[in-house]
Amino acid sequence: MLLSEGSSLSARQAVTALGLAGHQVGVCDPEPLCIGRFSRFVTHYYRCPPIGKDPWAYLDSVLGILSQGGWDVLFPTHEQAFLFSREIARIPPGIGVAVADFRSFLQIQGKVALVRTLQRLSIPQPASRVIRTREELLQEQQFPFYLKADYATASTAAWRIRDAREASKVAMEGDPEFVVQEVAEGILERVQAVFDRGRLVAIHGYRQISEGRGGGDIAKLSVCRPSVSQYVEQIGEALRWHGALSMDYILQRERPLFIDANPRLVEPMNATFSGVNLADILVRVSCGEAIAPIAPDEGEVRTHMLLMGLLSKGTRLEIVAELARAVLRRGLYAESREELLPARIDYKSLFPLLYVLTRLLVNPKSATMLSAGSVASYSLSAEAARQIAVPQEVK
Image (tube, rainbow, N blue to C red; front, side, top):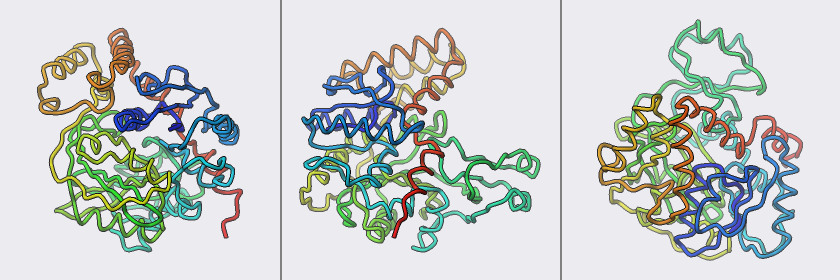
């Protein structure tokens, strides 16, 4: 299994999930010391250009690796799936890759397209509208609201606007359209699914128990919501989706309001520990295997990422206290399993944990730089996304 990158948290978790299923894993990434490389399950590493700077150079590099032979599946761990979908005809014969049709991608890849698709399918979402000019933004009267750029990764272009003064300071640059979305109060949950040409094969959901840096999750609790599954299945069927699809939603009195979509698996280890190895299922779909629908697990499984917990702290004392809670299995770490760097499963995962811990203890303010460096390695920049989406005419 060749992973499309190795710097994201999702890629590192996919490595573990695939390794536990018995797969041999390779990683291509711009960063030689990416977090995904530190695993006993990874047998090969290939350096490639960053997709955000030059998607075409990145694609040529990946295709060159695949053409050398030895790989059965190309596994998109992040937004590289968008590029693979557009250039699916260039993937070497015999390489399995489960990505949706490019026309389907264009209906959810951007924030603007997602809002319109959810409206068209009557899928519940917070009150949203598309704006094009700064004048439209300044006319908004209902505060607070979120302003979202069309293309963004890891919450890098979404702003919570609390009043007219904050709205006046926002620079609307880059994208021709933006989304203004009502702030929905409730519980943040996420759902991940694997589809086989519009047919739902497997699904898993979890709740954010503790929020980390950039809105990510420190701790999770698995959930099973039939109503959410029905909406996700409706979306997948309407788009004839093929491969992985993840969505975020706000739960309000048992009613979900969908706020984001990702054409990939997002941090799949909570699902794996719940008995639904979505990464392995995605591989099987990539290979053309016919899979009967897999029932979601209804138990409650708690998982955490100590690394995210450490990065969320601002002082050395807080960092040490967080580490002590994890070692003693208290607070968020009680009856919870480590999903990002599970040392008991994969001893090599200790190396990035010790590196980050050392950096934070030397300089607690380095957390921002550590996070930004990882995002730059795997993220699809707004300019790169436009290069992929705009030049090709979709008929």
